[in-house]
Length: 415
Image 1 (cartoon, helix red, strand yellow):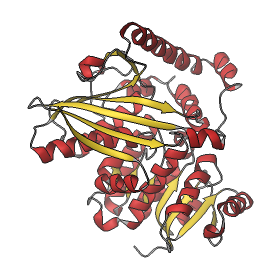
Image 2 (image 1 turned 90 degrees about the vertical axis):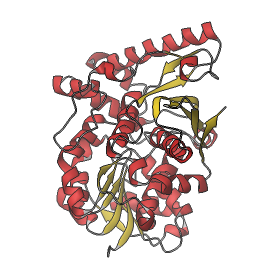
Image 3 (image 1 turned 90 degrees about the horizontal axis):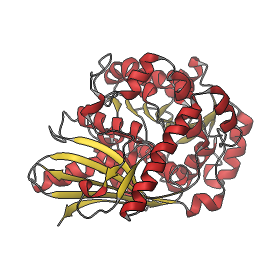
């Protein structure tokens, strides 16, 4: 593609946007053509100064999510647009349409089922026609989830061990700050969920499977529940105690199931997927803690959907554009492990592990490396276009990039 830029970071003046730009300044090969975009040229210039000499000549582009013409012009100039401007249900629709129309690859950090469903319905056919790769959820939501299942599939296929059946991701370690952007997305979802059609979509375990205008009708009981404690030994004999629900399961599981849909059901006819969180291996104590997590998550979501209690929470929760201290970002970490048993009875586990706050530092690495993969590794990418997932769009290329960036990303058979 003959474009002026390889990557444009849209939303570079936001907290995660600047972290992503900093990662690109540190990791992008010399000669990579990068620009910063946002509403304020003055704020963009300040970000560029903070990035140091390597970014001193990066161009600045003034563009506004509410002005489609500015987004059209931006997308026509770049191979990849990397956007951190959310909540995407409020600010993302114009950008995803602009990218799909221009044939520009796109990455974001959304964790919002209605937005991705909108993208599938309105942009998938357009992107397939233009050749654009529209890749949602390239941060902590949902790269560990999506690559975890993909790595298992790849290892099992290489071993000729059959197909995946019941598969569970376990968040075994999670340390970091609370994302103001994530909280704002929850606020937006709570408002939208007042609509019955949106509620039905959110409860549909296959909400993101299917093509444009084709939402599969799936019973809520056709997949494991997103808010149910799980006996750890049922996931794998090596585990003990009770596993709590993972608070982003209701989104990440839909992304993984979309990957399986886009790969024509390659994970297996009996593939069922859920996400959990470790709260310790002591049987009685872990069961109690898992119950607390389950009830607490439900209470929080209920409080966010009720205006008076939401106003109280808004006074104490992180605001959009805010983030944790440097120390919190540097000392954070996460570990996810995904377990499955194949149709031949063999057990496998994949793992992703990284240092850095999951929602900020590690997310900036995942998003930045996704943008670099689309911009610089085009010949090695799967020949796919449309509204994709990280695993389907980038697969092994993203795995290799994350490993080079210091992540532990692996899968192997258990004995």
